[in-house]
Length: 298
Image 1 (cartoon, rainbow, N blue to C red):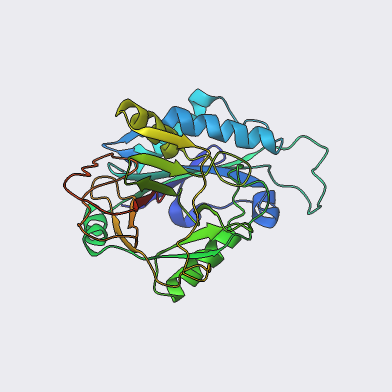
Image 2: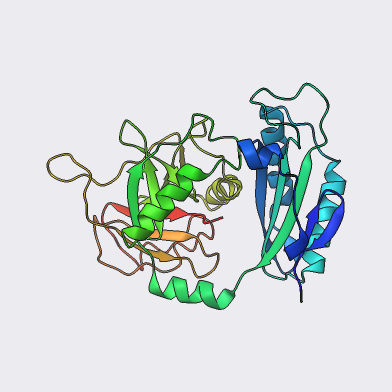
């Protein structure tokens, strides 16, 4: 079956889907996007994703391309036409097409809307979860408005490529003060041995993760401590420098998020101890110090 992509009011075969050569999203990364999980044919956390899309559009002064119900219809139709039961739907909105100029065009532009859906292989996710992954830390070289979900992802691509070249799958980004901001394509979480969930406070330095919002609510519901505003730093060597040893990681078998086991202790093998799924069993899996780091991979 040929994949179908929505572009500006038309559903086109994947090979024929295209935007204008002078679309500002193509030339300036003047665009924002959302990626929403599809589970059993339904969009997961759709309202929160659409709220974040609206904030991103407003932050760079792009008018909504259509009403929220209309966007919801487009996404569901793309999912239906591509027969995606489990996977993701990608929605991107750019300012539109205009002669190349750094200043925003003064004339009203029609925003460019692109939507596509992709199937995820549960077999691949299961195999990755069984094998586990590695994470390396790298300097955070991104711009100062990471809270806007723009398509300007070259720094993240460089970090992911460097991580791959180092034999790792994900890169954790570290600011000038030595604290973790977030992953190149993930949110960063640490669960301590006292049941405290530690993550970077919401600011312009990170993207406010939709999964993180839901995770914090679930964590509170499960009577665990929520430490909002506490930052995490990479493990330090005795000389105060970041350790070059790579922490061991695994993927949650339930949701596919990264679960990174701290090197401060390894007296037990962690199960699906995940900041999204909350399958925490500390009595069954004792670990000294920091127990696990979780990061959503969407």
